[in-house]
Image (cartoon, rainbow, N blue to C red; front, side, top):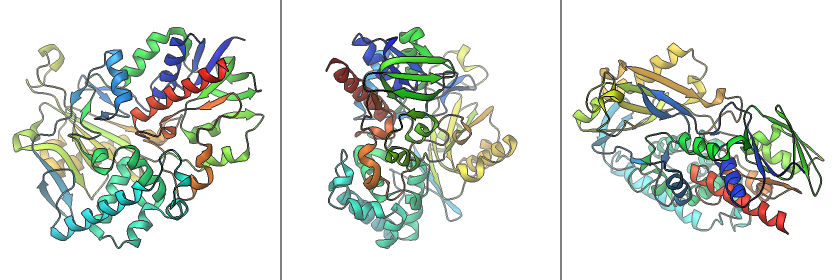
Length: 457
């Protein structure tokens, strides 16, 4: 037998699994279809500064990814949050503090009511076995949008929840199962933990980029990682697997498939698992989300007392963050920017209309949104880029699965249940911080432990 384990996918989940298995002394090889590692993290530079085209942020209780980053020597820095936030709403712009804007007394009361009811429902959902929860059938028959309608949420509340849904799942509330929504939020520690900057999931980011973690793990693994090796077929028996790829055939005792559930459909498996496994992959689609970045000589919005965080009910950019590099960089790395520059705005962007535009049109629209929020100076960046995840060859869409109604109760038990020697990883299979980098790391650790146990049994 050529290897003990073959891992399919060199994102955070796959690389974590391979790293764990290698440390256990198991001969492991990783197959990646792209010409890079990192999966749904992706490196780029803007005005000479590393940026994250994919997953960006980390925060408290994301212990698995934070421990991995520390072990690899990848440091974090706080996400800028000083100053007032902005909201572009119903044709006007106003300042606000905190995570949720106070859009009138009635609006505050309605959002508070919705949050209370949402988290009360979540208490009754078992994150490990959501399909077995008391209200599972009822909740999974509803979309998040239909639930909001059933409790008579105001138009303002529905629109704010739509922004949350777009940035969380890359989908509209009507496209996401209510059971999936409450389980997902519960795995993150609640709405506040998931949405907040300070004390929440956006508290910190990596000045060197999140991709640095994958790059360092791949460097440790060396030639165990094979790029441009897209897995196309897995043949298996109870004792062995043979994975055919664009870089040859790899035999092993076990396999870990560490790709998004929808991407499992790209791999022909023989003998075929029960048909429900294919149906699961069809019913676990990725959402659609794009990121737009603009760099400026300085973070000029800070001089106006603004944090760089903003919400908008007009697209295509609907939420922004200030991800400027920490102050104190050397003149050599600053280039032509000022002593506190460059300033970098990140905009989460609605892919539905934006992605089909030509590059110049996308740039114009994104900068127009930045300018509407932060002033005309935002139309004159020194650098700009956007990342359309829907245009990716592997796992197009992002950031994570937007699971529709009916999926969890019918197919959820199969999400990570092994099939013979085949094991499943990926952030969608995690019970903590599902959909985040932390969930990906945890899933890799869990799959590695499963494989190690099965090999030694």
